[in-house]
Length: 269
Image 1 (spheres, rainbow, N blue to C red):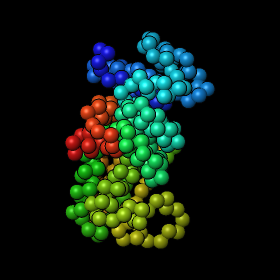
Image 2 (cartoon, rainbow, N blue to C red; image 1 turned 90 degrees about the horizontal axis):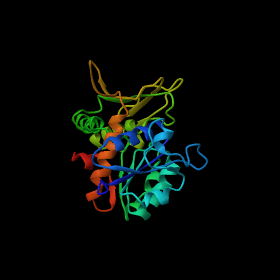
Image 3 (cartoon, helix red, strand yellow; image 1 turned 30 degrees about the vertical axis):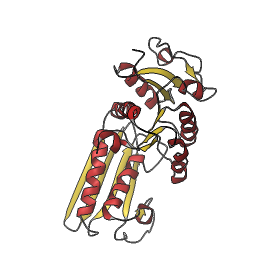
């Protein structure tokens, strides 16, 4: 049992953090060795299993990430950009695989991961599910096959607690569409329409974000031309798909050289 890769979960009290913890403890391929929360959180010092309302797991929630990372082979991190950047430095010090599912990271944030990737494996993706990553590939292929007579819209829906928009997955899909067309997404992105905006610009890639209820995640890529429409769609009904993908990435990273990777690499796509 002790030969199994040890995993630390950051943001342990969050919905995704708890799902990740359950996924690791139910797995026969990894073991939970740490749970990290921010300083001052009420779970600090408690057994993570008991804090989650279940049986003790023998893992105490800590606000000392480096101490936890030093005992681990991988860190799974679905937190916030500022926290993720700090965790990346500490994971690199510990030479632990850092799996990043954090969304809302800017290009500047992502650039700061490069020095850390010289010392450790980083797997970063806006979405960890197999289905979404297949959708990304399909979006790229369809965009490459269709000309600008087809307007592209990325439509995403999430629960009302989500704090960033467009979602990381929507941006992945937009990037795939832009790559398929051979353009820079920053130059053709169309977001936040309101008021008298004028006609849609030919070649733009539009984004629409819906927030409501407990929607786990729904993403549509719409290709609309005169007289016809093509819609590619993925619907997530359970966060467990993201947790399973993240754990798969953490295990895959054990055999890789330091560097930056994504789920396409993990899934062999």
